[in-house]
Image (tube, rainbow, N blue to C red; front, top):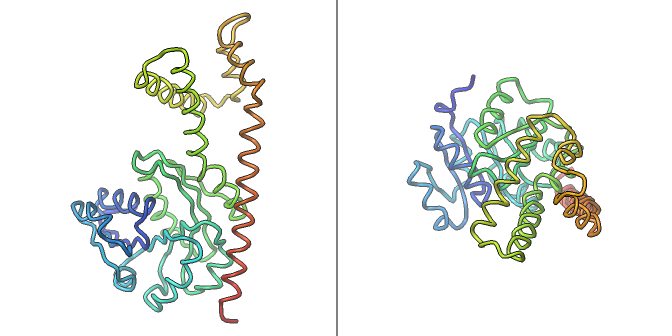
Length: 277
């Protein structure tokens, strides 16, 4: 077991995901230094003991592990400015598009883990995917897994899956919110109160997801348990099929994945062109 209370962590880029990560780390007892250009937007982190700074060298220099939560095009120039302070450390990149090969090429003296999470971190229900580089040690993995466990569920995957998973699980909350919004509007259309409809839709989604994970059944099996001949549910299912809901969701994941792959390749090419031979 890793004692997070003794861990010194730097979070480079305390935006939406970075500040949520810093918050969970501080609550777990870690010594956290977080950086951001506009520190006034995350001053509430100081109440938890997070040291805020605009000095990335200061943050990285005293850290055991560095979490990089920046836009892809900013990762290399920001970390190049950090210089030797990053050498020999464990670094976890939560930046989209940057694969392990590029990170290792740009910073060969660093032990890299590539990861992707989502916006459910504040309620500790995020799904975090990660891929370690060959240099990562067993202790490094234990540290990373202990941190990812603070955020929700985590799973090790192949680096080659990360771009598609970014489009599916990273962007996934937006798809789910769209579905829930539609369900809520359906409730409003038939006269249900707004607050009641919202709670009913959200708790139904939570319950269905938990049952799916705990049962091990295919979603179609669980769906058919709700459907009775000539009943209410089959009418709703028929309307959904007329609207091609499954095709719409599959197309959404496919379109987002294709966009993710294009942006990833453009980002990697630009960064590689800027790297010294």
